[in-house]
Image (cartoon, rainbow, N blue to C red; front, side):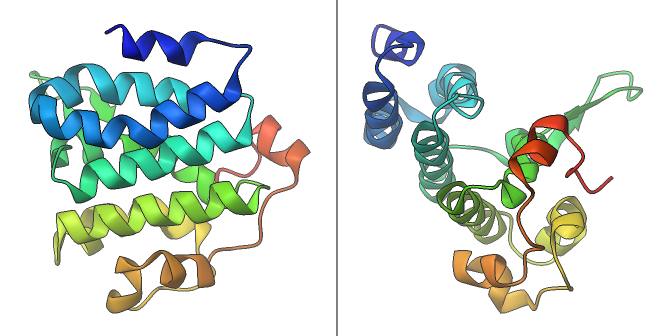
Length: 174
């Protein structure tokens, strides 16, 4: 918990970015349960940071956590409430709009995160559950082998939003 307090240090974006960069090695020691219960929520805070380098570092952190098997499908894809009336979106849905962010670094880091999610979720579930989430941000349907690489995903993204469109939310593809 003490380490995660550094994400609230608003004056030092380098500290926040460095924390995101090093969190995967800490999470490897604390395990999946603690990572999902505490760390993922803190990293989500970094995904809405004002500094682009913090956001891209947070996306790479999430991608590494997925690669390490420390984030479950439930957290990635979301869940339904116990009465099945409400859907709680997963982190892929919540942050897929970063695929069209005006910053090249953020778009590439978002592509890395999505590619790691595809590798983790695997066929056919990646095409059934994940592809519909990212399809609004793709020029064309992506081939299966390209879905698992950041370069493959990046190559078929629609052009980035302008900063004004991104901030206003008119880029969300829905």
